[in-house]
Length: 226
Image (cartoon, rainbow, N blue to C red; front, side, top):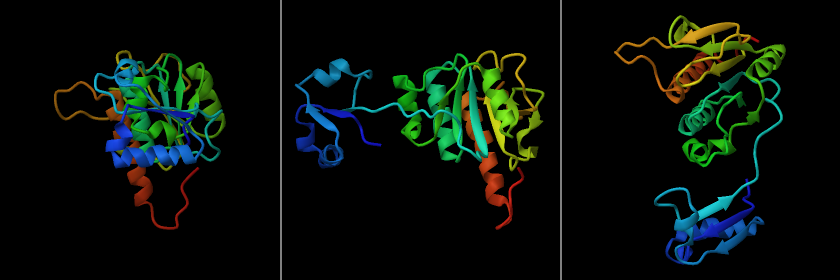
């Protein structure tokens, strides 16, 4: 994706060949490039020790999940931007078809979410939806099984058949899933130690990579169940 504009710290491109190449490529692709006065990056960036390059990109969310999606991650009231970014990164790395942000979920364009996604915001399709129940209704109508991740009482994630097209629903860090959602089942990760639960981003990674493991283990040439 080509940035709309880049802002470079004073003199940074003169001492960093890699940065200079990034700036050149972006400029050749049509991005506007501005060199800032000394100290400006430090004043406007959201981090204490910012990188010498800032960029402005267009929004990348899509209207709905791609047709034929096999695994869709749904965030329902996930509030922490770091957790949301980790969910995006985990979904991207495991080959999920899309991430749907519902209810009171933090804005995926929150600066902390963008940083925590480590670029995955630009790789995995992101859908900004409204009410969680409405989004799950549409996913169910599209033929996806809807599984809610829970701390206890769900089916062991390793026993779930992840070859079935699935919408994996992740709830709030403190309160879990909202009540009354149209779900087809619940899935959980058994804890061997004394920890009560996993961080929602870590749980997403465990569940999505189990789905990836099962897909990779399927016999070559086999057709996944739909």
